[in-house]
Amino acid sequence: MSVLTPDSVKALWLSVQIALLALPAYAAAAVLLGYALQFGLRRPAWLDALITIPLVFPPVVIGFALLWLLGRESLLGRALQLVGVNFVFTFPGLLLAAFIAGLPLAVKTLQTALQTHPRVWHEVALTLGRGPVNVYLTMHLPIALPALLGGLLLALARGMGEVGISLMLGGNILGRTETLSLAIFNTVTTGDYAQAAWLSALLGGFSLVLFVAVRLLQNKELAKHDVFHPG
Image (cartoon, rainbow, N blue to C red; front, side, top):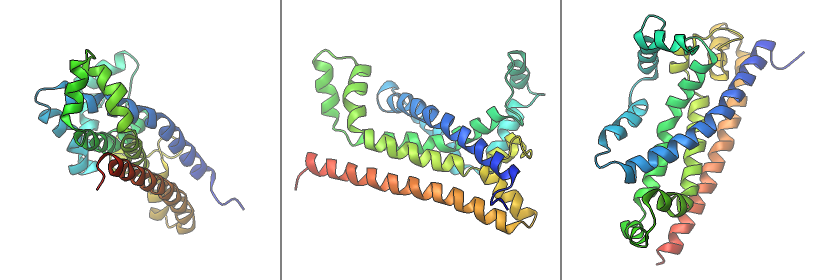
């Protein structure tokens, strides 16, 4: 007898695909937004607030807002359909849900690391004739790399465990838009606790591995600060 049912295997594979696509998306967005928040915008408070919203708003509320905004009856939804893009009850919708849920962790972790860099470093590099983007990519990012990687892992863990936004935007369609976290919810609802336990062990084990990796990166970051600021 197979440990996982065919539907559970489909849910697992769907989550793996989302993880593989979401991770580089987190990285690209975190690098761009980190620069905008720390160096690119004079008043970044509005952008900072927008990025933080998924951390403080209930996921179901965000999911409903996205469903209303991107639905087939909305102006944006109709415009997207004209170019063949549909986020409602589709794989792209699940990917968007994971991206929105995890992005704040990636961005805020990098932003916090960048804020610890003495401003004089940036100003001295600019006086040497280097552009602000060049300074960011060649000086600030390499120093903040452990923090960036830790943020990406936290974002990935949050995105893979997402339920509320995925439920609203993806529709929780068996075999099509049922992710691993939604499969756990569904198996508990149907009373299949053995299957729910196996799926929970998979997702929990994945999160535990990410947690250990984040701790190792944090220790590396602390050791780096001890070098920069001895005593």
